Image (tube, rainbow, N blue to C red; front, side, top):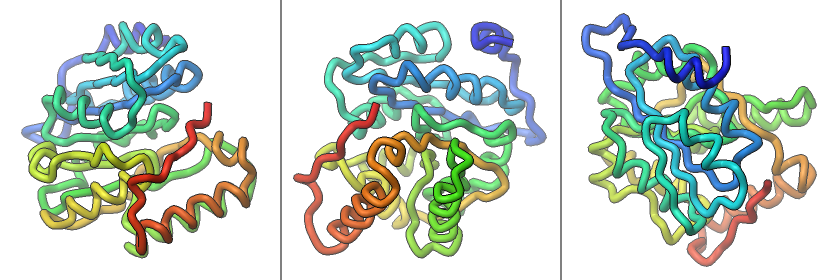
Length: 246
């Protein structure tokens, strides 16, 4: 079944809950023509149907807009590239109680939305899902074992291609800091934690691209992430840039 059919045949809410919360899936996309369709397909194949898809195409010079145009509930087009601003614009347009910020190169498992709405209660203010790489290379799986271990035991309360929060909490905290190009996810999560707990959901898995590792090599990519993390603890990272990999 192709993406057009999945979009057209989306049926009314099917959920075990008496009142199914609407989930706004917000996908910022900068030149993501090679990944976006598969990500959208992973959303439209969810049996949980109380969701909307908001794609924010920012600074695109490829076919990203064409891929997204007929297959999302809202398409926002911004001329300037900017991840945090794109996410904030998507959140402003969102109607859902739960905001799910999904990277354009990250695939949901079939039961992701149902699991999220079961587990992500008002006790929690921020969360993410268990991640895995889109490669069979053992080193990538080892890296994600460590990443998931950190999230599971709150050694670092970060994200794996997905950030969950409540819309009212997001707005109360002012959204993503648009002056940040690095560590903006951790910055938001840390702000949200003043309103509730952090939740790591391991009952469903997202598969995310290893393109940055493929371009830089494992050692260089890991060194970059560790360096940025250390700087975030002891320094102002607002002046630091994050190279786009496409």
